[in-house]
Length: 326
Image 1 (cartoon, rainbow, N blue to C red):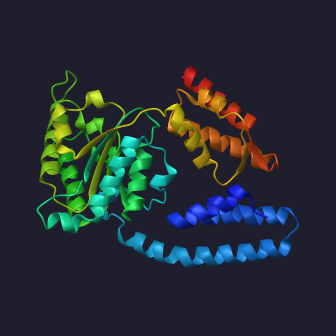
Image 2: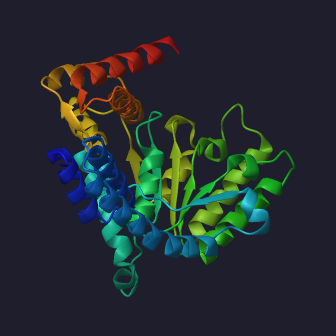
Image 3: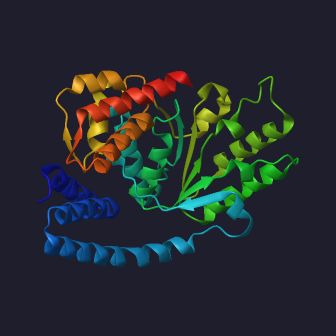
């Protein structure tokens, strides 16, 4: 039989509409039943899972193919169909309220615009690497049922004078004509301070173009920029965004729900949360998540039923050593 944590995870994923996670957990349950010798039940579960996969995949692929960037944009925009949800991430109370407000305003944008008000659509995330900026952009796209377009800096920024600004115009033309969430990662590459001693003329022109395009944008798309280096950004950028959101390393209060969320589909033997919280201090969300994944892999490969606290602790310590040795 499925464990209590698996049943809980199945219900959570169903309520959230997260089909991929539901199928993943159901597959784990089927595999467990097969190991217990319950062959008929395992085969029935597998057949139901295969039917669910077949039902979900064609429609998604058809919609996805329509929004693939064409011609020159294909080298600048990478499109994906996110499935990560905001409830799968761990936020501070302030961040959670901001994202709830962004989603509510975007879903009610017609009502707001009927009163000459604009929904929040332009967001700037800043903070240390691994604290969830990229994951949040993906989750917002999923929540709002939008394709995620990630701007490829290697395709956008060139050494030829004027070409980068021209490509940036193509991006904003797409923002206007193809609704989606457009994500500028490592934004300091084009948003650096124009008064910096290292500034070059081409980057200054690119930033001026970005400021102009952002100011003029009245599309239905979301624009999200993220950087690890807030201090490098030009001051004029901040007033162009509806929300500027700070990301920090997880607090001790956020560590437990972060670990629980990541290991929700597994049964865990944890008897000392304070120890895990101490071992996690100084690690980012991504590093804690990877430590949980490593502990889960050990459990599966060792053929055990429960993720042990020792495995989780060992993996957290390993991540801390790796971080300190960089």
